[in-house]
Amino acid sequence: MKFTYQFFDINQIYSVLCKPYGIKEFKNRWYLVAKDNKDNFVKTFALERITDIEISFDSFIDDTKFNISEFFRNSFGINTHLNEDPVKIVLEFEPRQALYVKSKPLHHSQKIIEETPEKLVISLFVHNTYDFRMELLSYGDSVKVIEPETFKNQLIEIYKKTLGKYE
Image (cartoon, rainbow, N blue to C red):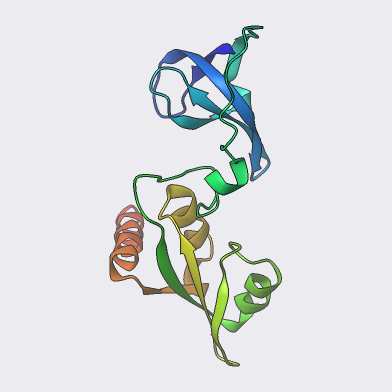
């Protein structure tokens, strides 16, 4: 398969030659999951930014061991950090969010560590991705990162930069 692709963060159009494995949905957007022939990495490409598609009838030897579900197992969203190990992240939610987080877990690895009338503490085993950080930021003051410290500090820096825009 060959197509042109426009990245959001790079003002340039790329030509991509790839081997498609399937599609994945995240937050009402659809992505092609494919092995890029340029570097042999599996990547995601937003369908709405793909143009000029050329379907090749050349066959390729499919990697029968590749499994999309397994590929995204420790990810939240469509970003993966395969060169990094997933980490245990512990979060504390206020009661008003606890019911939502329990009824619709953030990730399949979610486990309840502590539940009281004042708080819900959960753990997750995920990659520290942009998508995951943005999801946590969407909870505002209803969530607190307990561990790891490095992840907590990343969110603190994001909040500081955000507050700086209002000073």
